[in-house]
Each structure stands twice: as structure tokens, then as C-alpha cells.
Length: 187
Image 1 (tube, rainbow, N blue to C red):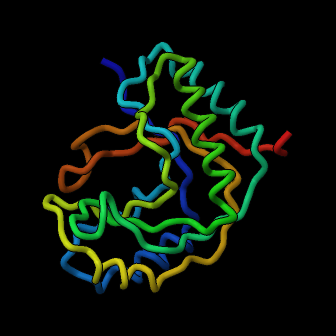
Image 2 (image 1 turned 30 degrees about the horizontal axis):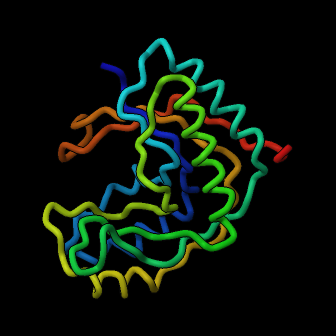
Image 3 (image 1 turned 180 degrees about the horizontal axis):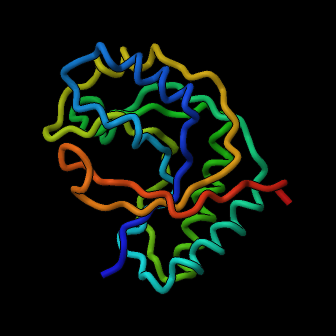
């Protein structure tokens, strides 16, 4: 059995802190620890240890082909739908969708080539804020979350992260950044 890993875009501290301050007084929701906030590009449930270096190299090549870009978190959403939401999230502005989608596709391709089969769900660029044990009617929460928008920030790298289940507080996964891979000139 291999290691759970994902490729993601992290948040700068000022954005993370501003969003945490916004959510702090809003009780009644199992908010994800702000230290674990990220935008997942590719998730691999099992990466063999012997393939980690090759995966890192291929991800670095893929990241190097995408120029740094600006991103703004904006717009609330949920999975699967507002009448039975099990995940609440924030989306991204239109300008960031294309480069994020490209990074997700190239990250998943790199994983496939190295034998680390990525999850096959359609890519929806988002920042997960809460995972619910039971689905809820989320319209009220979506209206609240929709009032927050981040300042724009530059995405200039992606991270390869190992995820260790149940090793953090409250049984949450512990995340360890294995590599930070800079974006390139887009060439």
C-alpha cells in the first residue's frame, strides 16, 4: 500500500488569516483547520514510495510550463447541491480557472505516467471549508460565505503533500509538504 498524496495550491498567510477571522464567529459548522486549507489539483490515494521522486520530477516539469497567475477566492458553493450539502467551499475568480484547470490536468497526467493513479472526479477549482457528517440544506450558509472575497494573490508554486489519516487534532489528517514546485514562464 502506498502513501496518500495530493498536489495543491496553498494560501498566503494574510488570505488564510482574513478568512479564518471571517469564519471564527460563525459557529455551528465543522470548519476545517485553516492550517490545512488548500486548493487540490490532484489526489492520489496510493503513491508507491519508489515512485515519489519520479512523480516530483514530472510535477516540477508540468508546473514549470505554467506562468504564475493571480487568484482571488470568491463565490460560495457546495457538493453535491444546496438541498443536501455535504461539503461547503469557496470558488475562484474567472481569471484563475483556466490556469488552475491546466495545472490540475497536467498534475493528473504526471501522476498517471508514474503509476500513481489520481482520483477521476471532474476538476472544480475550490477551497473546501467544511465537511459535514450529515447533509444539510445549505442555502443560508452559502449566502453568508458568498459575502467574503479574498484579496488577489499570486500563485507561483504548487505543492506535493503527503496526507496521514487521523494523525492530527480531532482525528483529522496530518499534512506534510514533500516538495514546493515553482511555476515557470509558461513556455
